[in-house]
Length: 312
Image 1 (cartoon, rainbow, N blue to C red):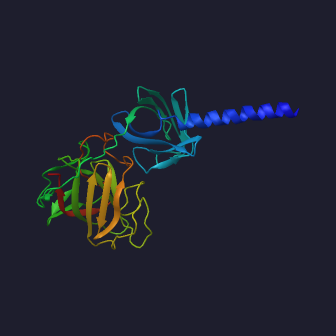
Image 2 (image 1 turned 120 degrees about the vertical axis):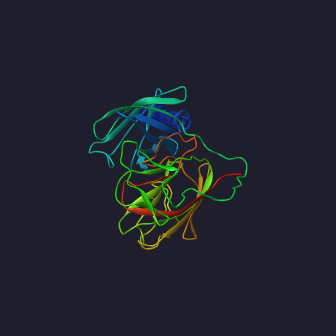
C-alpha cells in the first residue's frame, strides 16, 4: 500500500514538474499583442498581454476598444489555442470570451463580446519600439495656429465637428467628436495648456494611441485613471492638477514607448514604458507614426499654446 501511494505521489510530482516547465517555455504566446477586431463598419483596436504568474500559471491584461486595461486571472494555452474569459467593463452585461489560434507568430480568432456579439480578429506581436541612439529634438513649432482649425480634422468624417477657435483658444463646447492633427509623429516633445470646468473630462492621445488623462481630479489621490495618468497603465507619482477652471500646463516627451510627463512644472511620470494602446485609441498599429488627438466625446474642454518638437 505504501509503495502504491509512493508511486502515485511520484507520478503527480512528475506531472507538476512537467506542467511547470511547459508554462515556463510557452514563449510562443507570452508577450504583448496588437489586435485588430472587425466590427460591422470599422476595425476596433484592442491589445493583449500574456505573462507568467510564478512558474505555472499564465495570466495577462486586456484592453478593449474603450475602457481601461483589465486583468485576466488565468489564460489557457494548449495545442496553440489561447483562451480566456473576463467580466464586462463598460460594453454590456455578459462576460467577454476570447479564443484564438496561434499560427506563424500571429493570432486569429473570435471575441464573444459582453454585448453578445461574435467579432473576428487578428493579432500580431506588438513592437518593442526601442531607440538605440540618443534622440535630440529641434526647436518647438506651433501645432495650432490660434486662428482656425487648419491642420486639424474631426476623427470621424460622418460626425459634425463641434470644435472652434476663439481668442487663441481651441474650444470643445460640448460632448461631440474627437479632434485629430493632420500631421503624424513618431518621437516628440509636446507642450500645451488645457482648461476644463468642474467634473469635465478629456484626454491627450499620443500618436493617437496612448491617452494621457485630462480630468477634474483636484485634491484626489493619484490613480491610473485620473488626471495626468497614461490611462489604465501608468499612475502619476503625485496629483499635480490645479482646480478646475485654471490652466494646466503639460510637457510630454514620448520616445519609443518611453514617456515623461510634466504637469504644472512637476515631473509626475518619469521615463516610464507604456505597455500598449489605451482604450479609445484610433488604431493598434503601434509601429507606425500617429497624430495628436484631443478627446472631445466626454465633456467641455479648452486647449491653447500647442507646440511640438521633433527629432533633428
